[in-house]
Length: 78
Image 1 (spheres, rainbow, N blue to C red):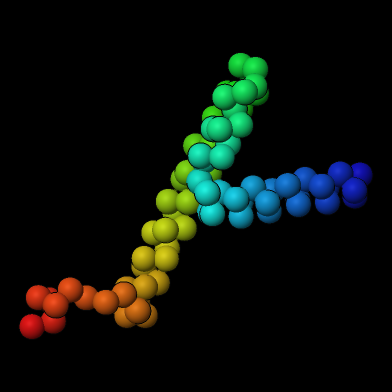
Image 2 (image 1 turned 90 degrees about the horizontal axis):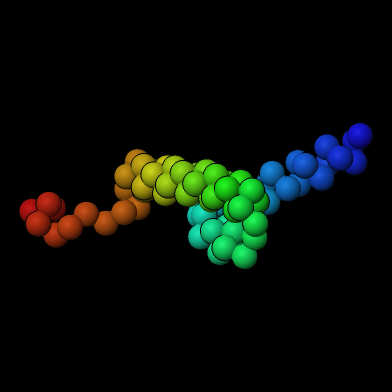
């Protein structure tokens, strides 16, 4: 039972990392070659991966604004 939980936990962590890095494009590419049931499941996972990537980008932009690491355009400085 513990081994199963470890496998699920590792798979979940890898999914989160891949979602932030690639979004759902990799899952959609895999789902094109599978059956209809697996394709629907992978499409749902790809949608979730896209939303996770969008959230990660939004958090990164917010942190950039807070820390001032993002350069402001020249006309706003004047």
